[in-house]
Image 1 (cartoon, rainbow, N blue to C red):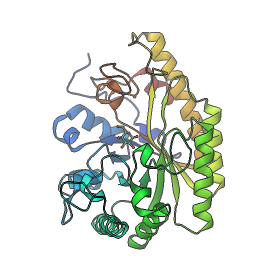
Image 2 (cartoon, rainbow, N blue to C red):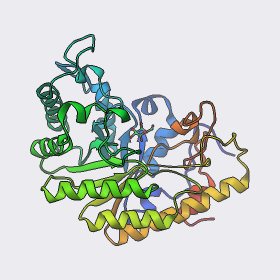
Image 3 (cartoon, protein in one colour):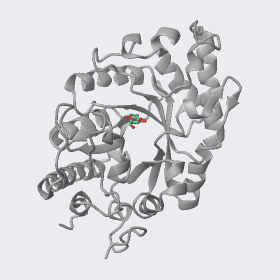
Length: 347
Ligand code: GLA
């Protein structure tokens, strides 16, 4: 009998299973810690790394020019410290979930800020976060999603980013440099999606990072978000991608993994048949075998999933509103899915 309030105690812990390969993490929120006893217990048992799904994004911390408020983020910091989990900080610079005022001169957000203003604001923010988390947080996403899906070069206003427009094309160099100055020990990550999926975007990112490294910009790792599906991309392309960036001298982290059962937005809601769950399990198994090979070669250090229980995944409403999905390792009752059993070599 499976009790709803309890998790399966007899399963091997994922972090135990992969302890000689890589850290294994998941995204959580302070809400989980307070209200979702099942997910909290799963995180405690199976993961040795966590990342905030939202509360360490600037819009939740940088309330206004003079207010940097860590009170919510501190709940996760406390949990990570108490439970001895590695905490990744996500993220400093992004085109989403930033406080709107940061880009503007005036409270009405009519006139864009000057280059100096935005530089001073983001530098102050990076310094404050580093000051607050130094020695506790080992790894930071310094920039998130800066490469465009359309041009495969630095995102511009057409791709909803004001960073380049206001600060100029070297803004990524500047923020990495400030992050390093504020916390020289930290792992500094450039994080993005579809790098493992779209060869053109991968090439764009590769050239971009190569250029940063040739200028001695302190980028230590690339984060591959890995929001992928049961069909795509092929494991061989993922492995090739990890190798390419590792050979540039970077560490590689999988930072936001989920495996959707849909290919695109046109697909109707599927029945979650045993065959579909088995197909997903087989896919997870092949991916984790690839991750193990990459870890053994010293290329890959972390595999972080974007959530724990299917019903709480962001994929339930994205990219299609009200279409559910089941991209993770545990179901809504906290029961391990076939994918879990497959990656730990049980069934
Ligand atoms: C992106 C971001 C994450 C998160 C996910 C979806 O990949 O990097 O912070 O918002 O989308 O939830």
